[in-house]
Image (cartoon, rainbow, N blue to C red):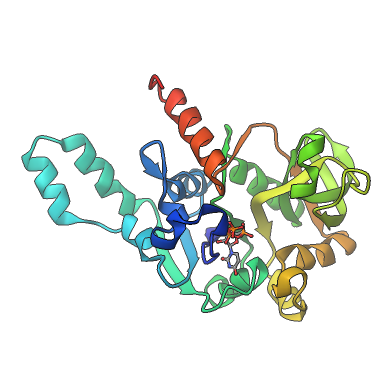
Length: 273
Ligand code: UTP
């Protein structure tokens, strides 16, 4: 399993006005673009082809992972070898591929755009709004679970009661520490209706079968093709597992989360803030 799909074609409305001019995936978490952290997690987890589902105005994402030989040479001539080396290794982290989503018709529709490139292999879907800090990396744990069971896997995270209405929540049967069979998913339930406090976060290992399910999925909430609706089909067939994740999750899809993540990551690198 080597392909990881990054849907980055959304409008990023929570990050307006800045996302009008700059893709939110390029906004800095301390000193690196947000997308850097999730690509790094995928690479550390053994994925070697990063497939970005992009849209108009998102060119900066691919440019970041390109070589800039001129800049590297200037840095070298100024004695800034460490930064020159850092920039050079970005392009060799993985193979970077882009496919377009012409109209933002939802996350499910974005994933479907990668069908031709993914083909008949199991693959990861990674949402760069969620930065996950754990050792071993979360995607690697999920990949291992897939390889053991042959079933699609989503990442689950215990959220506080008051956060439940902002997430997709899983109806689960806990099998062992960290492992659950998912029976159903409920999108943004009230606290009373919620079947658990386990929220789906932005990491998925999916069987290629998901593409045919997505093709049959009609537009749901907001007229968009929802990935959650397709996952519910897998769940009802007993084909969906949840890995209950213990590490830190940073939501960088909104301004306060971005600020918090910057502070957290800077501190982890020993910077006084
Ligand atoms: P969100 O629902 O969080 O939307 O998408 P968004 O555009 O990123 O941000 P807000 O809510 O307007 O602020 C979840 C993920 O799915 C991608 C987004 O880029 C994000 O990574 N997505 C969403 C697409 O690629 N295409 C779509 O049509 C919708």
